[in-house]
Image (cartoon, rainbow, N blue to C red; front, side, top):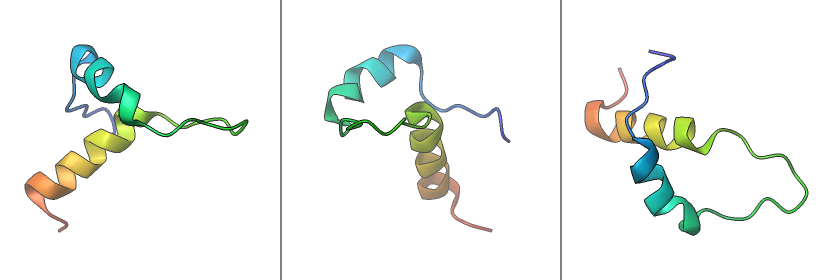
Length: 46
């Protein structure tokens, strides 16, 4: 499951302007975080 990505690059480029800016703090992998959120909403927590 660690390599499961639910969004394509084109979909990420579409929603990327809505992400907060990283004010000097290195950001994590937004695509991975959004994919985990979609997974939980879609499948729920077990």
